[in-house]
Length: 396
Image (tube, rainbow, N blue to C red; front, top):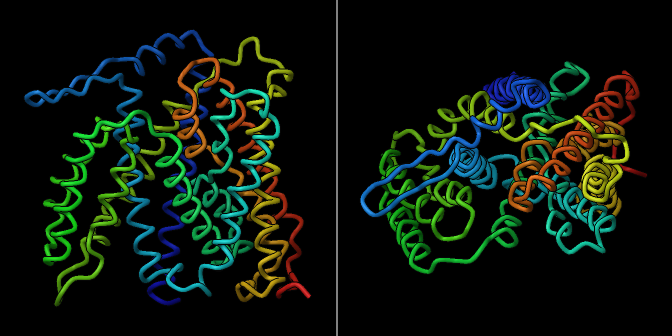
């Protein structure tokens, strides 16, 4: 195995561990929120936390510090991955990116349309149209890792590329559709900070701490601007240099390596624990059939598999892309099912779309059920339905 292959394998194993922790954190939130300790769960998340430097004050409950602060670190890592993959990784050429890119487009479009179809008569519910368009990379790769040799490295690379493009789409959606009233002064400060980071890059500055220091100022400014604070993480990441003169180590790769474990094993499980709690008492099957949870669940479970597989298959028919060597269409279909594990990203978009507790519970119910069905469905297809010796190749 090449050095690159070993690095990819190690990365995937790490993300599988993150997926297991996500599962444990989500189950813990569900158990505690449906036990006599439910008051403690709510009290912890509602604990006020205040940070003040001069005239700048940030006063938020712990839940919003997690969703606005820790998730900015997650999006910073996503931004680093996107930049690296597009410059020199699996998305650097159209030939490499075509199949997962088409799958990702379909995997965002079809689930959103399914959700809209179920909520067309409710203008408030329609704001959640993007919830089922997301894929949780840690969970999906974690399930894929459980398959061992039945999930070849090419299939894992396809899923990673698909999820990265999906994350890019989610970032664009958040920026365009989930932004509140804007503060011009805060945007000017954020823009000035971004210009400074671009100048650092142009001047060959490679000290990562300088980028992080200015990045903190940008995050605060974006937080105060009305644009969601997590987008600051992406903006900062895209200014981190990938290539350096001489023998200097890559700041982008250093940051990515340093943050991967922290995000996979810390940030994501904490977010899952804080956002997966939902009271099950009094819920019935009829609650799942309400427009919001049903639209989300079917968007994830049905929409993702139709969108990802359908667009990839159509692209191959039209000659826009082809299957990786050794991969069958049945394996792509099983992976398309796994892409319906929305969980973290779907829950996050749900927090942006709906602020009131009533809709929040419906979102969680839909995300959890749709993600569970997708995970089980994808595992069953790839473990027991795909033959041991599978015919591979582009469609005839």
